[in-house]
Image (cartoon, rainbow, N blue to C red; front, top):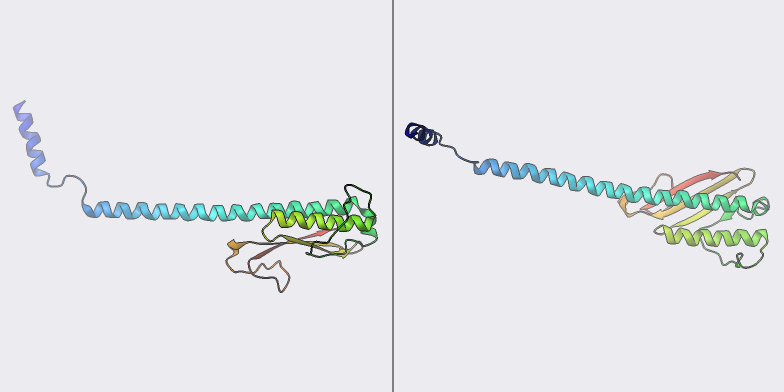
Length: 172
């Protein structure tokens, strides 16, 4: 037993290093901090992309909404009541409570649609242009701060920066 104790003591005395040096600890902290910064950047980018995808899905649903409204009022489409729907929300009659003509229904659809666009998308507006013969172009626009001052190539000339556009061709 005594021999065993002396050998262990000699091994401890011969081995000059015990534990980590300060340099190794600093390098480890540096590597871990770069890893954590990378993970934070990855999470931030993922959240930004998720926000963009959310807005695009709303724009898609709103485009389908006005297309369905136009299909439901084919008389208004034939008389070209939907040809120049702008981003301005018009004053309309209440077509839910009473009977409306096809022209009144198109104004009601326009008002309901752009009211929903403004509520669902930041700065959201929609416009429809075209004719029954050539088809319709549905344009959705909204402000997206994640663009960083860039312009969307899908937007018409003169659109402000940080504005995202979603265009859909439609034929009822």
